[in-house]
Length: 78
Image: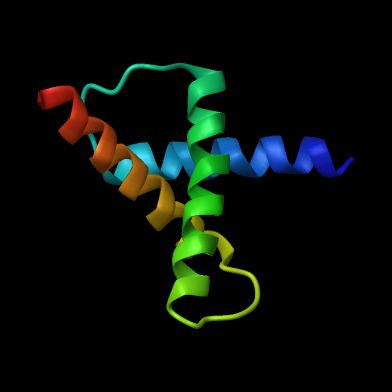
């Protein structure tokens, strides 16, 4: 059950991140879900580095996914 929840939340986070950073990002359902899941990991990693303990939550996950999108766009341009 945890895996299903992770996939659903990852998809929602990925969609929100893509909505907040519009652009020509490829990827469908699977890549959007992976973006959201990776965003949660990145958000948690940054929060730990800043000394924030506990769960990052939705905002941290979306910010992490947006950071991943930004980096991917910068790498794509180069």
